[in-house]
Length: 402
Image (cartoon, rainbow, N blue to C red; front, top):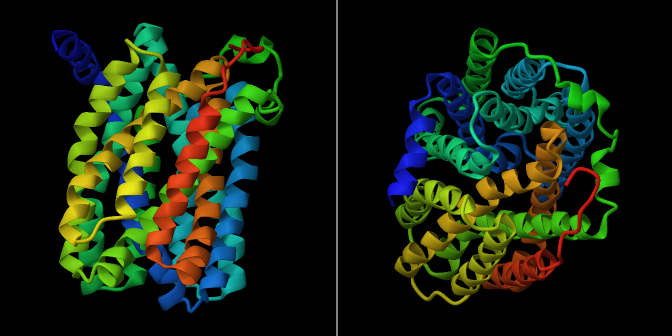
């Protein structure tokens, strides 16, 4: 454990990294303020049918994939990281500000695809900038996985408090105030970025290295398999996150307070798991850790498919915390390690797998739950986790930037 604390101290004590931690908390606040209530807003407030909401989310995801891929390349080769972060934050502020007032479904879909699609670059650009900063500050590359998990921990930290605050705003205000608060958070993010992030030009290596697009990179069968594995595990995660409250309320005959308890367990364990698995990634293969994460996903979803009482969900949520710590921390570093000269593009690959998986998960959840019940959703999620594990077993061979 001495090695663990020795690694924690320089990361948390470095004052140059604290603006990044603040930005990560702000980004997490912005996402977590509206994320848990987005489907309620779309179906109840705006009046979308479940099918229309699914199309709306799909179009948003496609916009994020297209815009994010384009911006990722130019952020690595032409633009400063600060300019892309500010552009993403301002787009987020504008999109959520417009969502506060507009109720036309076609207009909201267009705003979601273009403006919110541009805002989606903020996550990948922030993590790409963080990866660059640890190199500039002299941290050894062997510590990258640990630092990125520490960094990701601050994003998770915001999720432990923000949904509760947002629910208070919603109860005492309205959806309009909910989105206006999110818009304000993104404006603060833009201000902090302008104040504390230096406009550093892309490195010479990014200009002189091979001009390989992220999609051409996926033509390699080994990396295509691993990318698909993440799409599968994120699809399972989205399905099951949407399904868990309904399992507790409708199948297990629980209460709303038990849903709250179930969702509060995972973040408590997620924070120390972020540190532990980040430390472990400096001593073990990141690919092997990810495989263990997929195995935990199999156990997690299989157990949720057979629980018989709401209280049995609580200890199972510890597995969810471990799974999240691996696929949202170690996994980012894993993608970045294969495109070291293009961290923006690499992080966007990870974010793209999440967007595609989430989009598929929203559709699959509704179809399976309606046709076969809530337990079947977790059974399907178990199958997806098995597929993800099998795909991660494909060995990675050296490529252009490995």
